[in-house]
Image 1 (tube, one colour):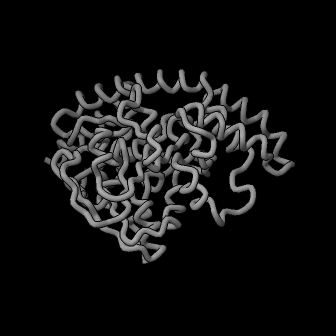
Image 2: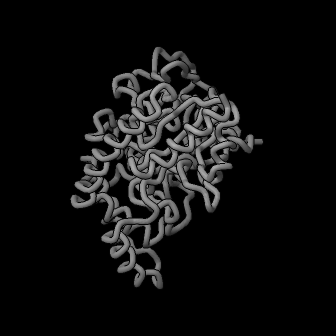
Image 3: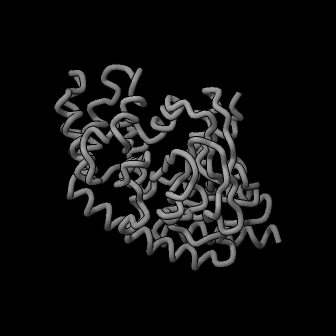
Length: 331
């Protein structure tokens, strides 16, 4: 039986009426141009998703990463990709923690033994010894916001699965393995483009592995609106926009780190940062109308850690002011 804490995510912390620093979605809704694309696709809802629309989406993703279309598996969000991983039937799966917990949920629910590879200190990869035949890691890692070097990832033992859900928030994506045919890479489009309610993502990997993962999926596994979203968000115009957003996010992260100073555990590389605060800080912030992500649900962390979504400086100042009051109250 999976621990219910492993199914805890930031949307649970972000109750209505609270200023949301718990969810890592960049914007509350898609930009106007993307909403117009999706609105135009509403006319397709009376028909089943078409093969040409699916092929167009796969081809667009493939061009974006320099891959072939048969190396792309379209998904209803990256979370669906984690749910498919047990089809690879590893003898033992290793999860690098602290990290996103959905892969562990999927393996445990499938009866596959799970091993924790726990990082500490600055949460960066060092030598990893494991007899697992499959290993899953996030890059940048949620919730630590650490960006691991591609060479260090490639040195990990066993078959490698990399969760790159937040890689498009890293300018230039220097440590991405999305181009590597020997690695299974998951990508999400929901964070950057405000599509959490639609679910849109994809897997990159060798064709045989993707066929194995796709086996048993229902007919028309991805809906028409998701196909249109994937296509739109991987076209050149969107990639230029995404690159600009990543540069802005880097500036916002530097500002956030400067404001929080000694509370920041490691310099953030994603659109969120990990801080340490006194026990009770999360509830105290909540009482002041501020939602942050609890981190004691991540293996390797306790309730003194908090994950905070990075927002533009004028928005982030609301969190900083509230935290300063809380720190004084708990001192």
